[in-house]
Amino acid sequence: MTEHITTIALDMGGVIFKIDSEQAIGRFIELGVTNARHYMGAFAQTGLFGDLESGRISAEEFRQGLSEMAGRELTLDDCRNGWTSYLVEPPAPHTLEAIEELRARGYRVVLLSNTNPFMMSWTRSIDFDGIHPEGIAYYFDAMYLSYEMRVMKPSAAIFEQMLAQEGVDARQVIFVDDSAHNIEAAAAVGLRTLLTSNGGDWYTPLLALLSADGPR
Image (cartoon, rainbow, N blue to C red; front, side, top):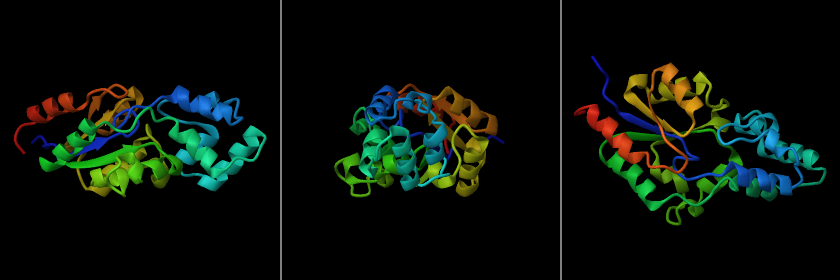
């Protein structure tokens, strides 16, 4: 018997809000990290940046390491400004409304994102939507964040951990991401998937998938 969809897992950057990796890379280069491009990407980070997003180092350890790379003392605010430069614009109201509509329909909606404490200091604040003090947490039933889980997409482990904590079968979940690599990794674990574009409309095709799933 086919399991009906109960849970929607959404990526953050590129899905909840549009991002620009070149903008962020440029900001870190301005801070003095001339080889930032070597470590930073639209979907995944490596080196010191990857260590932060996979929870292997703390925000302060990242600041210290980045200062060494820049050849000068950087502040936590410098680091935060660099990471939040990924953001092109705040989430569109229609995107947040889509999440609320999914929850109103009875779906459990969770966030599954490669991210870090600097980026989350913005998303978990009122600056995220200008309305709710808890920011992005207001919109989700649960948040699965790479630096807290100590594993990053596209590792199978991050999807398996989410499924275990949610207590659902992989076929009961639709995962939405703008990275083909992450989508392939999720599909390999058994999740249903939807590939979208950075800042694109994912809600319309998602509704089509939910409609095809039949009554719950």
